[in-house]
Structure formats: structure tokens, C-alpha cells
Amino acid sequence: MPSQSVLEQKKAIVAELSERLKNSVTGIVVSYEGINTEDDTKLRKELRENNVKYSVVKNTLLSRACDEAGLEDIKPVLEGTTAIATSDSEYAAAARILCNYAKDHDNFKVKTGYLDGAVIDMDTIVSLSKLPTRDVLLANVLGAFQAPIAAFARVMQAIVDEGGVEECLAKKAPTEEAEAPAEEAAETPAEAPAEAAEAPAEEAPAAE
Image 1 (tube, rainbow, N blue to C red):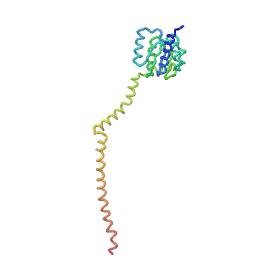
Image 2 (spheres, rainbow, N blue to C red; image 1 turned 45 degrees about the horizontal axis):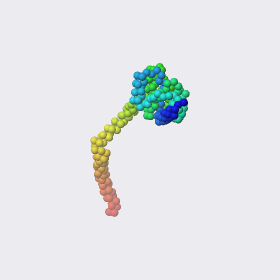
Image 3 (tube, rainbow, N blue to C red; image 1 turned 60 degrees about the vertical axis):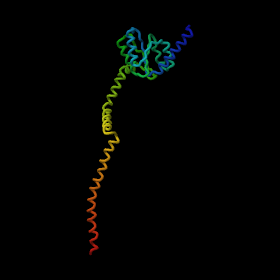
Image 4 (cartoon, rainbow, N blue to C red; image 1 turned 90 degrees about the horizontal axis):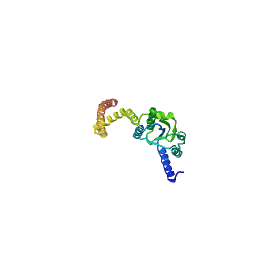
């Protein structure tokens, strides 16, 4: 029978695993049978560089953690050798790295996974594994907006070169004011002769 200290240690591990599952956005469970030390070191390094936490776990302890985290559907695959990769920020990294690794290692198998607190099937895991890296996605998004942003930047730079928005408006205002006298000057001469011509016509009958 396990000692009290061993039981307490196991409870602590389950609690830590449970919190890890709850706080992560995604997780992939694998069977790591047949992986050698050199390959394991390379795999862990790649996962770590992509913000993925990877660890070997006992099936009984992970099973209890799944119960506490509401991921009971993971439990049926918890047999044999088991490791879990989780990430608090990267949705596709674990699936991409582990699925690619499994292609080159026959004994390394992806068992199951979850996404935002829900267990997902293998088709979804494979789809996740085919997504580009975060850096590539960001580069594509920035590329899509690059032209509009560049055009906006050129307009803003032109305003700065002109001395700012107020300076641009100040330069435009005199032009509008200058148009008014020209319009008034054009109308005044035309109206004056017309009034002068009407006066004699009204006084003519009084002379008779």
C-alpha cells in the first residue's frame, strides 16, 4: 500500500496536470514507444522553441487529471506509453510538430488531442498539423495589408512635409476667399446698366 507521502505526491501531480489541461488552448497525446534519447532531445527542443510543453505521464495520473479538467473522452486511449504536449498560446504547433515526427517514426503515434477544452478527432488534428507557423501567418496578413498601409503612410508623410493638417487647411483657405471678390466684381457691372436703363422708360409718360 502506498505511503501517505506517495499519495500526496500523486495528488499534487494530478492537480498540476489538471490545471495544465484547463489553462492550455490545445493538447496532443502521443505514444512515444521506440524513440531514442537523441531523437527525444531534438523533439523536446523543437516543441519548447514553439511554446509547447511536453512531458511523459503515467496513464492513471493523466486519467484522473482528465476527469478534473472535463476531458474524459481522452481516457480510452490512455494505455501503453503516454506523453502529452500542451500549449497556452499556440493552437497548431503541437499537432504540426508531432504529426510530422510520427511520419518518420513508425513506433511514435498520435493518440488524440483537444482544442479549447473539447476533445477532437484525428481528422481535426491532421488539419491543425497542416496549418502554417505563426510567423508565416503573420507575414501573410502583413503582406495583405502592406499596400494600403504604404499608401496611407505616404499620404500622412505628405501632410507632415506640408507642416501638418492645420498648415494644409491654412494654405487652402485663401484660395477660396480669393474667389469671392472675383464673383462679386463680375456681377456688379452687369446689374448697374440694367437699372440705369429702366429709369428713363418709367419717366417718359410724365413729360407729355
